[in-house]
Image 1 (tube, rainbow, N blue to C red):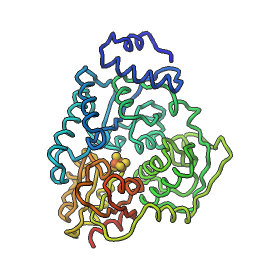
Image 2: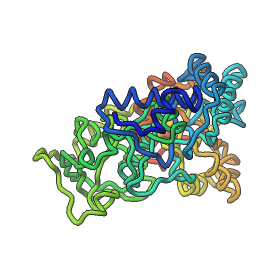
Image 3: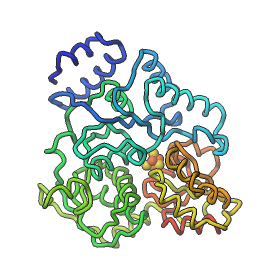
Image 4: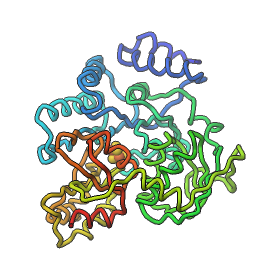
Length: 400
Ligand code: F3S
């Protein structure tokens, strides 16, 4: 891989051990993937934040890197942590876990990372422009950045995103190259997708059908931010999709007069595929947790919940938890939405989510969600069944 003189100096350690380490990671990655050179990035989004996922080994690695003097050169935000950083006690998080989690956040802070923990960085100021190069790692955010914003990122690991943040660069390869961004498979959608839950289900089906190829989706698909983030999360979950195009909706599809697939393959999604997918992902029965906010809720979603819960009361034997970023939480609190939800017996948490928090110790049996991604992960991460259903129906299930 070609390196400039400056980059070679950084790699040889002339600018310190931390930058050297970052370059070693990026160069190793670039050489394996045949990258031609490094490219400057506008921002990083770093996963591997929850103590539940990275444990003591991850914490030690972050502390070592921070002690070496690592400092990020690009705007960098974090993925959700294992708890609400302020209200963790109300989530039932143990003191020992909380201490470790706060240490992780502190290590990132020492490196200059903006320690807002969210999978929707594009809602809180980390919103790259069309065509800009970034290094993001949360799968749903990667799919959103590439597809909806038209930014360019590979699906980074936590370490490679952090190395990119410290170097301010990433290897020029994969989805950073225009030739790898063209759609290869066409997906004709024969159902009307007009809600977040349906967009999520469709994303899950499209992810499965695309077999790792970039799809061009055609059909009547709700184009709100809420639907598109749900679609992105689900497509990234079932099929590892980091990029998709939706005719007339996504960034690159809108830029070009006509977007076509480079291969002839065409598949169709009708009612039956959607029904079968729902059947696979969803259990039935009474729930003891309703979890909304995968990916993290927008302000409008919290408003929708507040409106539906106003003057009503969640069952005593059911938790109603909403997850969002700290910035959106503050706005929702200011507008009085949080108060309405909490007066109804619900809770609004920041910095975390139902998948990365250690909820397995709470003895939850069944979780209602409007997210196919959450429904996919809940059985393995918290050992509970998932009921995947519309937002309104999630609310009704909590009210009894
Ligand atoms: Fe975000 Fe957690 Fe879902 S990181 S996309 S809310 S699993």
